[in-house]
Length: 272
Image 1 (cartoon, rainbow, N blue to C red):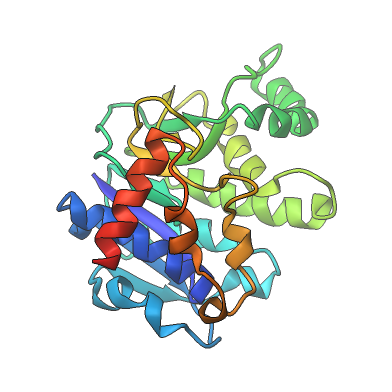
Image 2: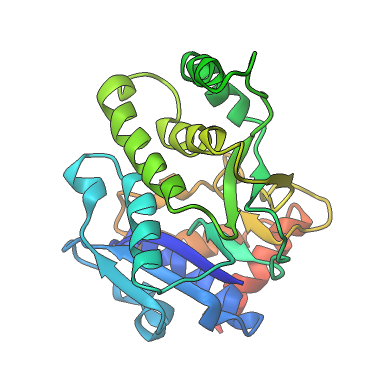
């Protein structure tokens, strides 16, 4: 199993990717992690480059997200580029930079294994006109409403058209729905999945957990939701980190769950 993560060449993503790499190193799996880096010439904070500077499986690519003022485009662009250049091969998982590894994902025979994200129901509701049209053209009465794709996506032997359609839908949604209040990037992935229902198999599982969860850790801890009001990654997005406490110390100040304890272990390993 390989893992692909897309980041931008900025300090905001560097402090996150440093922890992700560290978590892979703790499991001896760092060679399985491939990092796609969208070009950006902004200054970098040198205290957050220890792991990324030494990581061997990384590549730079044009920052299409900046070109179209929509950073999620970099993820699908990087996925297609990594496949076309054989930097990744099946099976692989598309993960997020604001995660840490708890245990290796299990390889499964389904074409798409996804983390079940309840918030995807809102996105599916926004997609209803597209799904109704798809059902009509496919000869179905309706489309199922339970493809709750979100977070980690695990792929195995997909038709390359899946990624191209995701890319195309993302551009279409940018033209038609950019100013609307819903996740058009998630919508593009979900709609492409619906288009391939007849040829691909799908499985929804719990693949990640947030910091506030006090249950057995899933394969990844995802701190996108933070621990409000104590910690949010957005606190460190447009800030000179050298003038503040910094994200790592802020994370270490509070232990509230099993997931947070694991993240703390990664931070402490990195700082050591």
